[in-house]
Length: 164
Image (cartoon, rainbow, N blue to C red; front, side):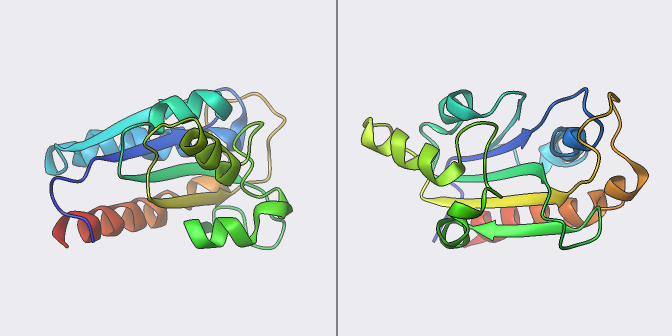
């Protein structure tokens, strides 16, 4: 169980110039602007490259929430998928959790094997996207429709971790 002394980082991943790939960045930025005063012990980070750069953002934290765009083709655009660490191990081979060149389970494992303190609790919110090729600083309207759901899930998870 977490407590108020747990070190928590919330990471928005994405490319700020590729339509639906901007959604993770947008959600974390909006959440931080609207709610950071309620979560003074939570660090909010925007990461544009993933991979080993993401590892550096996670070192020393007990818990992390990562928000990114994904494509499964199995749900509507804007749907907010939720994956726990256990889910990540089950879907590892599917490519769903590829953090811009290095999948998330491999990244966490590599960090631990290198002796870094990596988060024990990891939640990934993947917002279903469709358009990852057109240049725009705004996600498509359908993907924007997932913002409120993702923010509610993010807030609920942070409250759960901080109040237990």
